[in-house]
Length: 269
Image 1 (cartoon, helix red, strand yellow):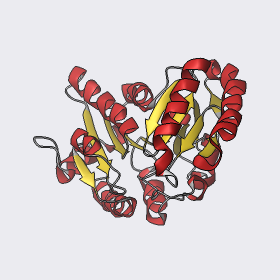
Image 2: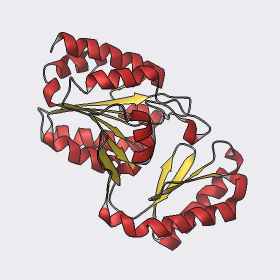
Image 3: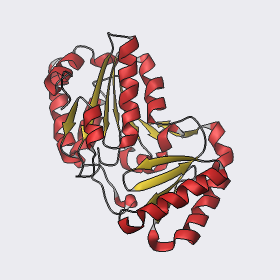
């Protein structure tokens, strides 16, 4: 837990008095779902689904902000009609079961990303798992850590050649359109309309979201921003924990943590 920052008890007590003006934002992998070797097999912890459903009726907004496509997220959270979905770092977005809206500036890059996915398969073969997401392509080396350096070098060279951006993650590198969208950008925009926000993350890409909450607090001292790191495995770096107000041990623990939050907010409703 970071020193001189809000504690979990203090944070929920402060949130309870302003729940109607509060938004809760969550990364997916490693936060609401355990990390898996097969990216397609990831599922949210059951207790998380129950808690998010309840929280969506107690706070102003609940949203998932993920590198996953909206379609993937909707398959897992589609029963939660009031939860917003931000996919591909904000290149896609949807409210519950509503229409998926794609960032227009990213659409011309779909053929380029598709070509990169095919090129990665040809060049790297079984050294990486190629995850094509229409607007981005992720190269995973969770099962092949001995090839990490080669995969990263190939991705950086290909990104430079194609004019794409690179996003590093945990045992993955992602190539995406050169459009100004990341988790920090999403949160910076989203918190303009609320007076309180929490963000739960577990990877280096989530630090930008933490920074967005810190920046909002700096210009509006009355704003309550709470940054939570989730230690989904021993892969969660100290950098992420140091950037947060406190750390939760696992996605399963997140489910229990949110269930307790529901009780606190219901008691103060």
